[in-house]
Image (cartoon, rainbow, N blue to C red):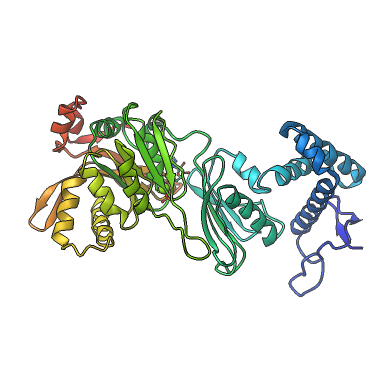
Length: 462
Ligand SMILES: Nc1ncnc2c1ncn2[C@@H]1O[C@H](COP(=O)(O)OP(=O)(O)OP(=O)(O)O)[C@@H](O)[C@H]1O
Ligand SMILES: [Mg+2]
């Protein structure tokens, strides 16, 4: 019998094989802080209750029950068991326990309460006891913990299994997605040294609309007006940015301007785009199986997509040889196709594109690749996560051609950062640089003219 401390400070006999309280700094048992003892106690109780409930529920009965009835049953069982231990729990704790047992039984355990919070955009799990969350651009440590690494691994396997993928010692890296569309990357033992590492990118219940991006000052209405016209008129747009800068969010928002009668094919590693068109077909890449066979790459899917009579192809992220196929697609009747690329400036995005085309394995001279890039891509939109966590479109640049060996670009709109406010959040303003884009003629020809005044050199109001 092991004695653990209850929330009221009393000692209680809980379970036979409950873990000893963690040793204190000098190795003295029970010297852990009160919160730590409380958490261990709560986790042990939850685990025990969960096991008892699962043991009590008859599999035959479960199969005949609807999910709502099953939830009610689990709630009833939990409450009964809680009542038997009434001395241990106050009402709030009992409710928390019931909720957590329900999450454990039907959902993703401790993750569920984080997923319920619509303000959380990133969940970063560094082992079972260290979870960080990003809320409104700020990263903080969450009090939520898993019981141990086995518990965390069970949850990861549940998620990964649902989308037909696998994670174990032989393939310890995995991309997957949750039912709400969030993207998940997991790295487990033996690659992860201190417990499983999980990174979840959330997009909220509803994707951010272009209007919301204007409302939260990520770009101005003039910038959006121009980008929307470019998308409508099938100008080739690439979205560039660092990790978590808002590339996918912008791609989603801009996709709304694709005319609804067009057939769009999307290709992603873990499907996270949520396009609002009626005629969208989605495809996901597949990693190799345990024998190293069966891999389906983005490149395979782009090639295949060309045979699916798409009007536009959207590749969630270009990071390798598929860049060549994307350029060819954009050049051969699928103009208006879109993708994102990891780069810190529009010029870097172009260099990366060149490098990725080089990875396709055709020994093409640099000038040929460069010429192809310059003649295919029209607009590069640069997204950035600024100091303090704000996400903004910091540049909209146009590729205008080649000057000798160099691709010429002009910045049509940009965000000028002027400093930080007292909370260390980036401050600045958007401006139009007084440049008339070359693609204006195409916009006009496609029946989506934009007034030239929006390009006049001035500061733009948000
Ligand atoms: N303009 C914005 N305003 C507020 N939140 C935003 C904005 N853009 C993106 N976000 C939020 O920031 C997070 C990261 O966005 P997103 O996934 O689009 O970035 P990304 O550049 O595609 O990241 P990755 O490089 O990991 O693919 C998301 O949770 C998203 O909801
Ligand atoms: Mg992305």
